[in-house]
Structures are given as C-alpha cells and as structure tokens.
Length: 178
Ligand SMILES: [Zn+2]
Ligand SMILES: [Zn+2]
Image 1: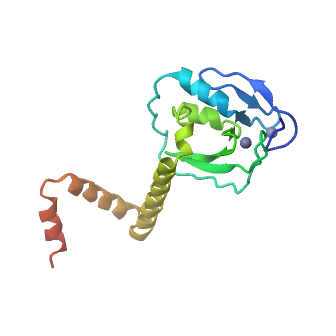
Image 2: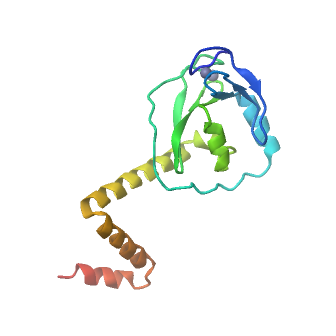
C-alpha cells in the first residue's frame, strides 16, 4: 500500500503505546489507520478519556485544499476539521473507513485525549459544533477590531458579569433606556 500523501513508497507496519496500530510512511511520517484496526482498538481501549484543554486558545485552522485518494480502496477522502483548539483537519475515507494522519497529527490528538474520539470527529454533530466555534471565534475577532483590544476586554468583562447577574433584565433595561 503506497503513501497517499507523498507517494514516495509503501507504508510500513508501526506499533504505538496506547494508540491503534498504524501503517507509517518512512518518507513523510504520515500514518494510515485501517478501519478494522481502529475499531478493535476502540473496543479494547475501554472508557472514553476526558478531553484535555488546549495549551492555548488560539484558533489556527490550516486549510490545505489537497485531496487525497484512499491508499486502500482508491476513493476520494474527505477532510474533517478537528476543532476544539486543534488547527488541522484529518482525512477520512467514507468508503472503507480508513483514516490518514499527516506527520505528528495522531500524537497531537493523543496529547489532548482526542485519539479515542476520532469516529466522533467525522459525525455531523461534531462538525456542526466545530463550525459554530469557528464562527464565534471570527465574531470575537471582528468585535475586537471594531472596539479595540482594551474596550473589547472591558465589554467582555461586563457581558460576563451581566450574564451571571440575577437582575440582568433590569440592568439591561436600564442600560438601553435613554
Ligand atoms: Zn508519505
Ligand atoms: Zn478507502
């Protein structure tokens, strides 16, 4: 089975601690997980691990428009944004269920305990949440540009205080009353 990304040569069997067995490309270090290996690993793995927070809440989507062909069945693979503060997308073959990770992507997911959520990442619910997180991040950025960093921070603080306040509807009415 040849590497779908760099196409330089065949993938080689590779074992990992606490991760499914993969087929590794010795040239670009990308990794392929066959569907059957992923699912048997999920079954043995036990309870789902709680997600670990991102080291910094910076949204850095890397949108590569590259489309890969599945190394196993030749179908076009789809790219799925991981979201949750992770900046990359992973490639999934919906025909055979295989998953492609570029160099270090699988390890990056493991650092966040997202390596046992990979099948959820391909779900509509997950992708919907990623999209609204992304929209929200863009909205926040736009507001910051409009208000300036300092006033935006103050507005956020007031908004947070107001949202927790038991008399927020009265305060809101007062604020908008001319
Ligand atoms: Zn490769
Ligand atoms: Zn496939």
